[in-house]
Amino acid sequence: MLNARDILETITMIQDEHLDVRTITMGISLLDCCHSDIDIMCERVYDKITRYAKDLVKTGEQIEKEFGIPIINKRISVTPAAMILASCDNKDAVKLAKTLERAAVACGVNFLGGFSALVQKGFGPGDKELIEAIPEALSVTDHICSSVNIGSTKAGINMDAVAMMGKVVRQSAELTADRDCIGPAKLVVFCNAPEDNPFMAGAFHGAGEPDCVINVGVSGPGVVRAALAKAGDCDLTAVADLIKKTAFKITRMGQLVASEASRRLGVPFGIVDLSLAPTPAIGDSVAYILEEMGLECCGCHGTTAALALLNDAVKKGGVMASSHVGGLSGAFIPVTEDAGMIHAARCGALSLNKLEAMTAVCSVGLDMINIPGDTPAEVISAIIADEAAIGMVNSKTTAVRVIPAIGKNVGDELSFGGLLGSGPVMPLSTYSPAKFISRGGRIPAPMQSLKN
Image (cartoon, rainbow, N blue to C red; front, side):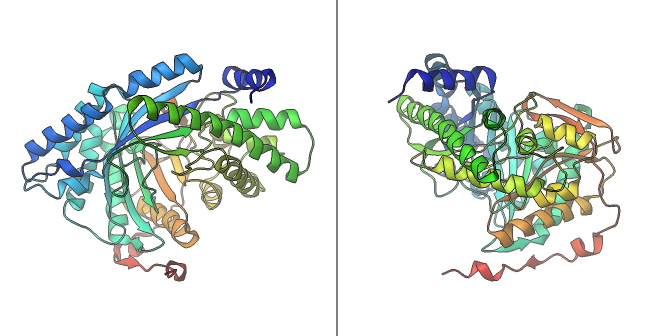
């Protein structure tokens, strides 16, 4: 039973510590929209999305007003588009992307994810067509997000797809160079992609999901940082315990919103993703949590250990608070979206090598990192391969979302606005991995894949 202290604590979290529900995401299966005629298929896709999601934004706004809980984004995720494109005689992926954009605009959502392909073990019908269309699709749409899964612990890493994605990321930046290279900010390359992720740009509605489902992603790094600040000097066991208790409270709020949205929309409740997702707002930062633990600046030695403690405690506290936890769940470290990470990158405390080490213990991977505009495609592919190897060997989700800053060099800035934030261009190694990437083939699955 709630008492006055609990209520006041929650109000303080919302008003002063940036507590919010980052997203309500409606997942919609498009498998029954398949047709050999691309025009008929696109019409079916538009009709189904707008029929299911017509009240999504309105319902989210009603819950915000009634419960006083900020819900930052209302989003849609759909079946990986390559799957339904496979049924078409004319595999016009850009036409499908434009249809998804029309549906997103009609529903009033912030983003629609699922312009995606799953190619960890090879290319099926529609996969190459969709991947090759990603740069143009992201340049002619504003709300569409794309993802490609190029590896998994079970399948290994598809290095032919990795080579393709280096070129796709670079082309996406070139086609949107007049808009601060926004294209690749809406594109994620995954290893071990989850099928129920509500967070963009990596959201898609997996083949094993229901016809329609509601997933919720919570936030709240500012709340965790404030709790640690109030705790004062205590040992790391007590720090972990405090983070667990705080994550429990944050996730309970997400469970409440998810259940209410599910009931009002008449759609099954899927999962709560209890990830700590930062924003560019001062105080709402994963980096500041790590610094509150005792680091002088995020990126110094000790950062990986502090992040491992944080990620584990968030999962342990959150999993007890929700009937179904899924998605990514843990702590995000997107550079341009986190005020503390931006500062650490600007002052030189945070390098790409340190970020890569941190991805071994965080929720995702190298996220929202600006790299020099003249970075060759094969270097981008090698970054993807390195991160995928961490995910494959450790049986965890890893991802790469890097933005080649066309026309800009190390130290220059890119600014995307909103939740995507801004940040400096970070340096990369100038030695070439071109021969390694050009070999192609597959990196075999590790021994730990043989679990049957």
